[in-house]
Length: 624
Image (cartoon, rainbow, N blue to C red; front, side, top):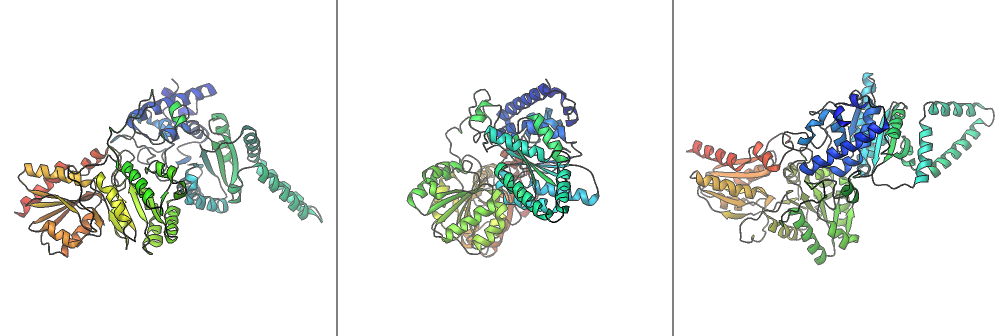
């Protein structure tokens, strides 16, 4: 096997035949499919970028030269080629390698990639730092066509095109656009001609020569320039990038290693920023992901022989329950509209989009715009629901404040993937939302203790003429006992059990953990009551007084960082209700939690039922 001989990019550069390179690409794809069928992961995107990773590491002198992978969905081949072939079986496992580039993992990982659109900004910063320090290395930023909907990508290109005179290579991995053979061939030929060594110098010399011709030099130059621009506009699809000051190259075949390698080498030597536009096929080389790339974009474990993804055993997830609830709300209220940021399937709104296409808005990877759009929709008399992952809502913090909360607009945020999301790790955990949402004036923040409450909370949200956020985890929906949840009352939770020694006040998915803690404490001779808090904001001080009356200890549980979180809010509320006991809060630490199964991570940070119950027992013993 060729792959067995590749332990670093230096080994890769020793290969001298196209046959070996094609064989290597096939072997890498086989390893990616076999591994992700067990571990899950971002399969389709990485399969489409195998030849790209090979060509990049052959044409650049990595790690001296710097390669930034935007998001990192497409970086599995990069990991395999940079000394992590043997460790690849531990992908996304606790204490294994990350599903995204990580600086702590390899010198070939230049940044910790996770959120879309940032690679060009990173690349520009590195290139400018290189110039300031007088160093000599190439910089390449790989970005997907989906990430190009992010505004920050265009901000970076605008700056690169007008402020950078030395090289920066931007590689656009386009796995969605379809270009016919002859048009693509003409465009590729003309683009390759423009970056041939010597072309830029020849062009400059001709311009100066024409300008110096007596009497009519400037006029001829203007006519020639206009003619050149007209021809270029007619034949080349990259004029948007040209207008930003970038030299555009492409489109080229992103699966032709030889062409990719030659193009990147030539682009590397051109003065100024160059954008190489490569067309790839998402899911390439694996029949099932080629047919259903959207399903195999981010996938759990599956049968690699049949492509079958196991079901969830009939248990609905919170996301599925939210999707069902939106269908009911959409049927009942024609003014309800949905906004998503490139996550139609991930947020459970696929059916809503098909039933109500005129009331569904997918803004792409542009969360700031999406929240701003929702504000405009609300001002126009509609009731927008922004369905978004917790970690991605962080990107629109300013819009949450200025466009939504400042004006107290009735926008509902369905905040999916709240808390720890498991194998995707630090860049995707949703463990800051209670803090940044809770600090916003006019905002109401809720979290269902089980799946049945989610639909009730969505209905309740539409009764409020103000901003509302409902946060829920990436998991199967819990069931808190056989009895149906009681009605939603603003600021108040629901007692699940009574206890004489301590009250456990748990928010959202932590209500299940609180019941486990109560069982553990009962075995230790401690009587603990459990309350499903429901609200992180507002919190009714009177309700806190009721559930803590006669206890010396009130314990809060949350899957958010403790700083500015639910526990802080409860402690403030407890001072207004006459509670004289102690408030002890359990939550996530003041550090970034890495990847692994959610249960493993909760245990690691001290949020297992055993750890919490032991800590409570020790606290009670100290107070006696």
